[in-house]
Image (cartoon, rainbow, N blue to C red; front, side, top):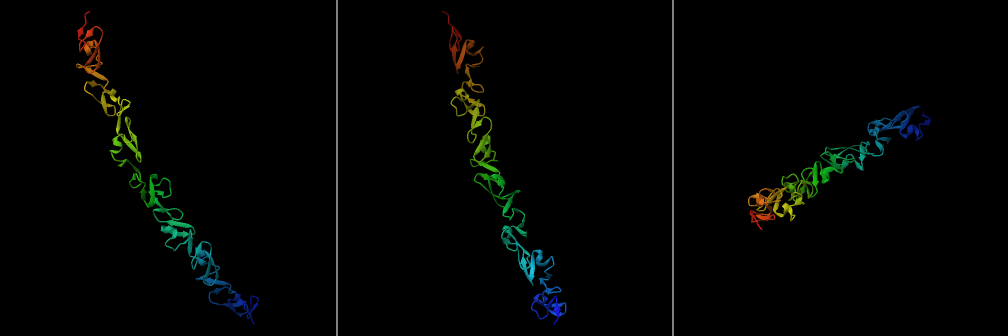
Length: 279
């Protein structure tokens, strides 16, 4: 009997159980076993002591049988897991990328996140609080589903009372549609849709706007009743003269209190205070 590495040739343990002791110190290994003592198995053309065996992600413990490291799988440990899904699955990386290493996805254009689970809308991930201008949901790459009352590709334009914020007629053309149904009115306009002008500090709806003698038709623009004049309808007209023409109105002898109504000074009378009173 021959002896190979201290074991007789008729011992079942000779040549690591995977070969025959042909002569002293010489093992003839069975298929897929290698090494002087047949102690090295072969897995898919790589010896167990080769750094490339099992794709470098496992160990070859018996012929063509890889024991894969954590997060690797497959016959030669060629597949990796990304968030519980194998890299060869169509659902890997949320079906929007490639699992290139354990828990490492390379996302398709338009997707992001650890697992490529978020679409990207105009440079922002769907889970970003600022996506779609905070006025919608990013449902697919560069596709915003806008909240009611907001418009266009990035939900950037609010609507105010059914009119788009970029329409020239929004807020009655006298304000800015700041957010949904919220107008910021220009100076001298008020109201939810900026419909009410202000004349000299009073709203057009005020009973004493334009001194009560006219209509506020635009910002600081009074349309005066007949017989009244001035920017705020503050001047009455008496017989061709305005009440502030003190030298000529009411003949310079009284005050014009209302259209064609003179209040004469003492000693004078007549519709225009043109008559002297003697005794």
